[in-house]
Length: 231
Ligand code: ATP
Image 1 (cartoon, rainbow, N blue to C red):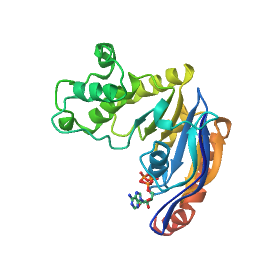
Image 2: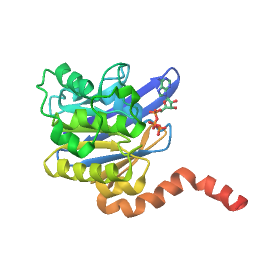
Image 3: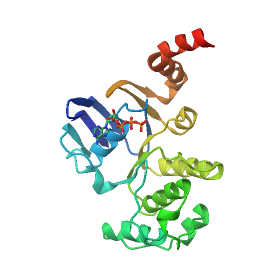
Image 4: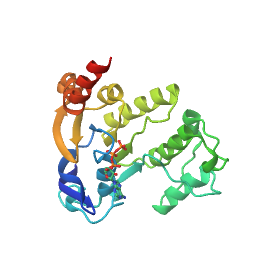
């Protein structure tokens, strides 16, 4: 199980995470929901060891091993070095972990990327697909996906949903963020709502029916009244 316990993180005086706890079990998809600035990316970065200076604990298993050892990350905006082709990027990711490079052709029949072009020249959706490809071929027990559907075309969107379902069924634990509530509730088994750096509530799939109404009430209640006055 991938665990976050009482995580606090501040940038200067700005407390971005205020005691966040959640767990991602093997074979489950856990959605992380929250408004812009709620702290989702900061949480994922702390989990993956890309942020320091936080308190609380994060890790995998009883001995809280570093999450990065067993987890693939697809960041919100994947970074690609200049003058590296898509293929070289995937090779680089695998070699950095001392892993052999598999035949990419079967995967690329699905994703249809121009692997011999520079990754920096890819469109936003192609960049997302390339970052996904680099983690999918590694078959990690856990995945952290920050807005994985963002920028994907309709076909890639459907493909990603099918991939997530299969990974889920094979026992992969997946933590993902999405601002598209319908997509998130379609694929997730449970969800955590983050409001201003605090967990507002954990939802199980059976409770997703109330999630949208709760989000509207919690996040936009005042705004809806203002909207009533305007329109
Ligand atoms: P979004 O949905 O817009 O991606 P988010 O929930 O992922 O938002 P974060 O990116 O985690 O939010 O940001 C949470 C807060 O932390 C924001 O107020 C942001 O300005 C602040 N923040 C994030 N990174 C830094 C940083 N490196 N230095 C200072 N403040 C930061």
